[in-house]
Length: 336
Image (cartoon, rainbow, N blue to C red; front, top):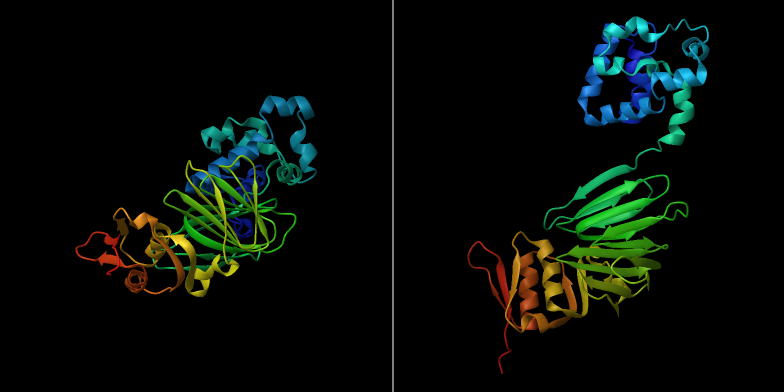
């Protein structure tokens, strides 16, 4: 088999399926070609699906014969010496032989039809971080994404849209301008649509937070109508609950990227959830008063133990690290 043909394969299933489709119609497509094609076809389920989609563009033998007549092989191929593929039927895999005349459609038709019928699939990038780990990602469009610990997200870039699926955790987005391709983050049943900005999204424990540092974003899903956020505003909503808006220091939106956390009258459960991203052990918040405590101040991002120790001193918290289970945190009344 020609080395040039193998080198032309790009690894993109639809592109390679079109190349195989054109190659198999030639008169020299004998056993080595069919063996290599079969190996390619069986290497990945996406190859079979891509080849089926290419074949579907040409229809079955009767439809093609009715449209262009019996001379299609010679009409398309000119003087290249291509003969009808029936001479090679016995050498094809059985499922291919059943496609009949569809296999002799020319590569020039692939070039003309395929781009219109089959837009390129989005480029996908999956990112996960362990607890205490962060990642700084520069996407192919130039947008910068900082991913906090214990997060999972997928970046999908296409010619019409840039979409991030945040399944869990926290990420900060510094979006590259591209008016032709909206930048959308999906998290917790919400869609956060960028309108030229820097913003932060948290999806954790049934809570979705959207905080804007610069510019504006639109939040839809889970609300009656889209909510427009400007710099210094935060959107908060628990699954099934009402959405609330509150003012924040714009610098607090993604302060974790710079190594510290800024809080202003923030409920203790949310603060503890943030701290839990920086250590291996889960944190259990106990006691009837714990959910009513609020915290205002700055926490330097350090080890989980060090952050809890500082938080405990500031809010009169009892912290129990005994055993292998969760670290337990309980609000206690300050000594009089």
